[in-house]
Length: 409
Image (tube, rainbow, N blue to C red; front, side, top):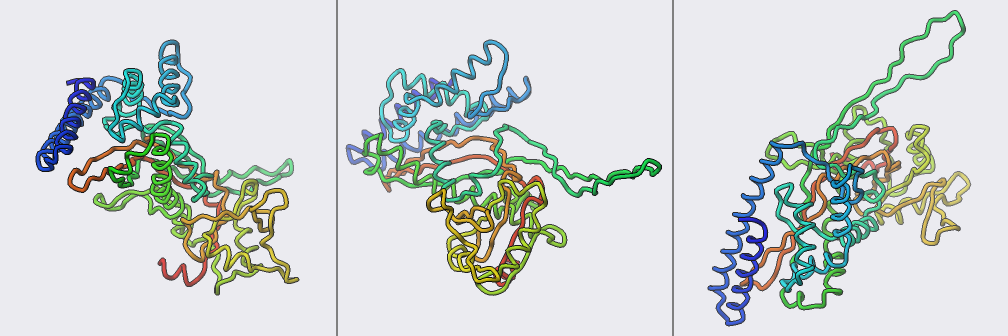
């Protein structure tokens, strides 16, 4: 069975199920839907076998849908055409119709097949690849709610990615002509970004699926941005990191986790009460090593900003939290932009150059629909694989309330 045969069989089964539903035969429709699930499972096995065979016969190919790498001749043209199709209105319409069970034109079928063969079935996963413009919209909405996730450095490498992490560095010295030069003490650590599964589900009633395609797409974007964004935002700030237990779920190593777990916690400053002092702010800022100041920002949740940071004053009782005259709605402290990020806990204030956090997206977002006939709803499961870690802790500092820190520990 090839992909076209699978799709034809699936469409026929879905059509039969819909007819049974229209006739009020719920039990028969449920049986027909089970046939769809069995067919999907069979195709999953075939796709996985194809992926395993490909892995044995050729080197794995790193895919980055957002930026096609330069290659030679026909391969470059092929990748460019696939990337262009992924960004097309035709594919976006085909994707949306597939989600709501609509009929695709021949052009839409070709577009749908081209993109999903390239970005999904080469990895053995049968989720439906979300259109580029929709994916971009989802992550942009997520970034508005979780700006730290938006600000971090991202790469798109399909596979294990090893990175160098700065550990310690000796001071550079000047010597007179007769003095022997000392050996430097530059030390580094290596960390590996594997793949942590990020999966979130939204449920849509069948009645709601009757809305127009142009309304359905932004609705799905907003819902998925809230779900996937919350998980991604948590991952880059508070993710637990690689699982020590094989049965535990692996997560990216969040920047807050990295700072609090570091031996001696040199990058952590504690304060008492609801409002940190001016000196607390200065102490935390001093923890960020020279060279990382350009791009440094402050991240905290709404409660901490408006009941804590907004009340901080200097020795002359002047507020540190001031509006940016060149950017309406933006506030700064000592020149650093303050960003409201709901992934931060109450009492946590993160000083961070987010570019010194590396997030690798191992697999771009796909979406898998699942019908529930009796409940007359459809589950849309968003799925992505990513992993992240700080490249150096010296580019970050955490100012944390003692009560909050005690509760977390």
